[in-house]
Image (cartoon, rainbow, N blue to C red; front, top):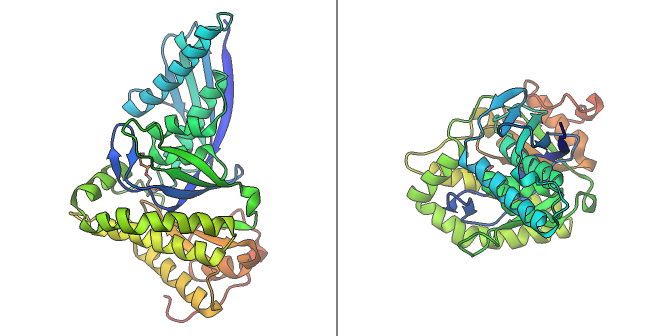
Length: 351
Ligand code: DP6
């Protein structure tokens, strides 16, 4: 039996300018452009192997060791696009094996809890598309592949790139211009760090897709966000990244997280993702920045209560030390050198 295989990894990305709202649900076309930072391969990532063989009887997917259904329209859309691209390559070169006609076996593994609000679908679809594109020997144009990953999960398009990434919403109805592009590679700003504070590893209360559909349909504030707030912020944030301006980057990141949670609250019925611990983290970060006289830490929260804190490596001891002092029960320190936690600052009024 001949089996063709390829393996790829894709890391999680955390949005600093949030994607929230679709203008086309089946193509995952967003109502606004977004920006994210892709974590390094050593942190949270999905590892996916894809195999094709004339002897396989059906397409199959194993996620973290368990057989999963491949029936979702999102996965089917990704596989169909990749097969079509491979079929075009095969018709141009008759000597190539007809992989586009073989069934696929896909094995995928996360090194973090799935669906704990840690953007697992983003890394998952990005790794799936990369692994199959590599198996099919398709051109490695990440923006092109990002359009396929986007159909799996909107935020997945950004995980095709490392470092600082923009997802340009595009204007076309067919989505051909809705793709991820690199703003800057990780090496451009290597001192930028992200700490993930796992406040809760429960499954999300309201899944992102359902939540954003409800926001689009019911929130008035959302119209202001997509037309007035985000377009300006998109340009400002790209500039802050290019200039390595943490102060501006941090302020915009925190404001955008707050704006996103505000439109969730303005949805009807309201959607709550933050809990009391999340709110205490927000308060602590603001107090720390106030005490320092400038922004040294910036929080952001996705569709769940877990916090991601961005900071510059130079301030690691102060930022992580302070968070640890007040949230010792929060996980996320395990990989850190304990000495990094001894630089905490005393802050009044955080209980
Ligand atoms: C709050 O990409 O999970 O994390 O396209 O429906 O799969 P679907 O949604 P998804 O939504 C992510 C929402 C967010 C913000 C972001 O990552 O930009």
